[in-house]
Length: 340
Image (cartoon, rainbow, N blue to C red; front, side, top):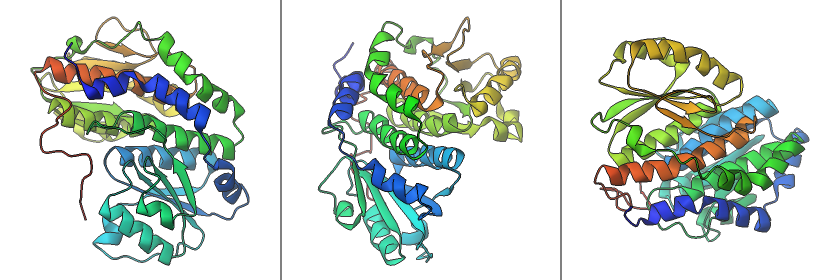
């Protein structure tokens, strides 16, 4: 296998999680108290790229678990449209690995003027956004050299999962977070094989729901930037409303299901998808005979999300190399993207 920095970072995820668990000093209780004391009535998330996938995950998990209306706000609503909001009872969560994106810095400045409480989640404690924030959560992934986010994505998820678990007093989830490195290492023998994917087809869908759909947006992004394949994320419910007419053997079809209620709804659709496509790849904890990417579930969707992504990242990097691409240098891309 060709040496690759992004592969090294992906394979190092258990160690990075271990360090995070040992060194985490983020003040989750302060933000949790705001929520549980009803000081916050709405939550808005703002992010770009892989961080936007984390924001989508956060929006779904917070709304589902804490019962707070949560919205993932496109930065352009503020930066381009100049829209104004009453954020006096709103927590704005800004997620940015670099903390240096101009549009997110501007969003932070404007949200403060609108009365928001600001929580910034970043891997850069020197980010200008941190200076504006009421609360700062350190992703603490060490320096991520690769253009493609891997370890910062997973630790961003951990920040969100830990905050929600503390706010909802779910001690079992907190215990499982501490055991994640052990879980990932124990399943290392069952690496996902990139060679089972038909690399002659460069377009497809990745279908899921709920938290799984948020993960599918990151998986889709990695297929695009590392494998140059247009694998589009879709809710299985939305696919049934129309896009299923596109499905045939000229498309690859990835179907991702976690063990929560949304994931079980996706599992119910697998039989239908298998009747209309030969190019189907199942991502879940079940037992399928072929084209299966399996992870070892602990029956908690939040924890399973990290276990799944920890297996996906090394596979997609190897798939990129298998196609003759350089995953360390995705074309046209740089670590910090300016979209203001």
